[in-house]
Amino acid sequence: MIQLALAAMTVLQASTITLNPTSSPFATARTAVVTEPIATSPEHIARARVALEHGDFDVARREFVIAVAIDRDEGKLSTDASFGLARVLFAQSYNREAASVLERLAADASTAGDVDTEAKALLDAMWLNIDAKQRSQARADGWRLRELLTDKRLSNETRKRIISHVR
Image (cartoon, rainbow, N blue to C red; front, side, top):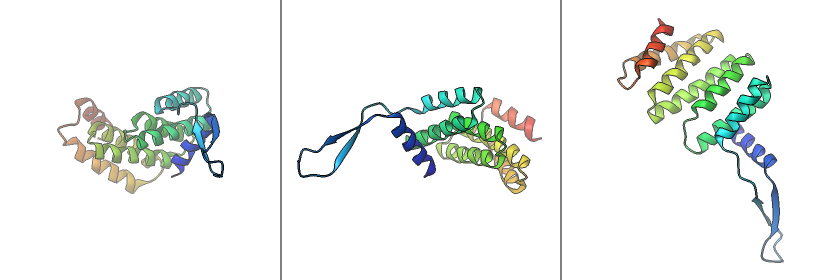
């Protein structure tokens, strides 16, 4: 809900809104028409990466949050935006929140049938949960990773990455 509100605020701040009177002179309601295009997820990701390079973590975080919300609203898997957001949260020492973002991505990837993204997100989330002293959640992530290792759809590259980090 908050993500959607942030996205809406950013769109309204970036767009010019003109009010047009309705056709009836007696109507008191007016309709708002956005005259500029709404920014897409890749545009927000690009802005976030620039902000991250300049050390402006608050702007980077906001832009990644908006990109994640846009992707989810469009029914897309928000891989780049979610990993970017987790990176920013980790840089700000919000490891528990970063792990939560990646666990949400893993759940979305599982629903979409993308086992590679699910495994990569869980691997990073597990590490972040260990660092945040969330042992039970890290254990749950580890068990799910073990299950994913048996999945034939998992790429060899991802399988090797998991094995090298988990064992």
